[in-house]
Structures are given as C-alpha cells and as structure tokens.
Length: 296
Ligand code: UTP
Image 1 (spheres, protein in one colour):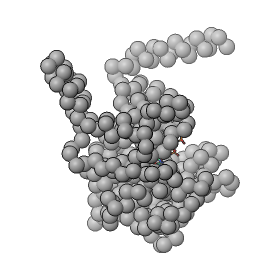
Image 2 (cartoon, helix red, strand yellow):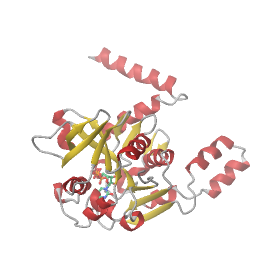
Image 3 (spheres, rainbow, N blue to C red):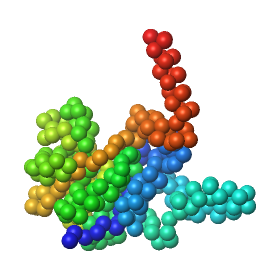
C-alpha cells in the first residue's frame, strides 16, 4: 500500500514579470479569474483530493496572499447583520482550518526546485504534492485527485502531462517515455525546455506527486536551465537512481494563467462555465465575433 498524500506545497514566490505592472503590488496568485483568486482554484483542487496540510512558499511582497486566508471578521459581521447568508457561505468556503496552512519564505527567486526545497523540513519523509497556481485545470474529477488515485497504484513520483505541438515543447519540461500504458506512462528521462530534439511531445504541467527522495536530490542545489534550480532536474535524478517516475495524461483542460493569452482564455472558459453569467457573456462574445467578421 503506497503512503497517502496529505501535504501539498504551493510555490508562490516567483516574480510574475509577465504580468507587470500589475504584479508590482499584487501577487500573481491573487489575480482574479471571474471572481476568485487563482490560489483559491488550486486550494479547492487540493482539498478535494484529500490534502490536509497546505505549505506556501512565499516571498517579499506577497502579504496580500497571506491576508486572503485570514477570517474577515468585520466583513462577516456586516454580512450577518444584513442577512446576506449566501455571501457568508461563500466566504466560509474560503476559510482554512487553524494550523492547516504554513508559510515558508524563499529569500531569493532561485527557481521552482529551490522554492520546493525550502519546504523540506515540513515535508520530512512523506510523499507530497506540488501545485503551481498558474496552471488552472478544469477536470472532473479534479486533476490532483486523478493523480492521487493513479499514484496509489504506482507509487514512485508522478507528474501531470499533456500533449503539446512539437514546436511548443521548448516552453515545457518534456518526458522521455520508457513505456506507454495509456493514461499512465513510465518515464526514462525528463528535459527542461529542450532547445532541440525533444524526446516526445508530452509536456509536464504544474501538478506533481513526489517521493521524499526528490528533496534529497534538491539538496545538491544544482543549477539547471536558465541558471535556476529546476524541479525537473531533481525528478530526473530519481530515474538515474533507479526509482520510478510516471506521467499521467490527466482528463481535463489546462489553462496557463501565467501568460496573458492563457489568462484571457481561462476567463472565457470559466465565465462560460458559470450558469449565472453564461447567457449574457455568450451574447457578448457572439456580438464581438460578428462585428469582427463584418469588419473583415
Ligand atoms: P514561473 O516560471 O511562472 O515564474 O514560475 P514567475 O516568476 O512566477 O513568473 P514570470 O515568468 O516572471 O512571469 C512557476 C511557478 O514557480 C514559482 C512561481 O511562483 C510559479 O508558481 N516559483 C518560481 C517560485 O516560487 N520561486 C522561484 O524562484 C521561481
């Protein structure tokens, strides 16, 4: 029986330069998709997958992110007084159990691998999940749950993967596949942002379940692509050491909310997914398209 995954790391210490000037004062993870900050989508996904401990790796200027998880007593009292029970319930859903969240500081943005390594003492000797809040995934069951179910069978380490066009592989970590078993692939290597000869078109996206030995690999603090300490390299070291690494072709759609185009696409998809918004929003989108066509 493989050990249950109950801890998740959320690395949120990046600089978010692609969203400047907004990210000068707003953490990227607080940016709003429809009416919820990106971090809320990741938290909900982790919660529904059975995660009990939430470890945020933060940095300077991320205070708004920490405040977001505090109970908003004044606001709650006002809503209660006004009888706005639906809004109260909405707020209640964002409350976290006392002691469920831990914050660790990454003093310098030295890469995703380094951010994950900063949480090593909290993870200790357990398998753990890593969720990148930039990657917002529509999936049923949610992506991390699919992974936890698959990981219960396979053990080892597991990354979420999806097929991308070959010419886009240079933007991702890419899997070298040893054995393709359908939804699950066994991996024999991983390359971060290959400039040429990508080993496949299976890209790694921001959901991971990792064996505690990945933390030991990160102890080397080896610089990889772009001079950063890469999580991909530490996972690839697992394979070198003869331990199993798998990719899961998850069912669902992933949006890259770390990029402007991806964020806009997610806004459309999540806006249309909301029943109360769909009719008006769809009308608007159809009008925009019709006007563009007419202007051509
Ligand atoms: P990105 O590569 O998207 O970097 O990081 P970024 O700094 O967030 O954004 P841009 O590229 O400057 O716009 C992927 C994830 O890894 C975290 C980020 O917060 C994001 O969730 N990260 C990255 C860290 O926590 N620390 C780092 O040193 C680097």
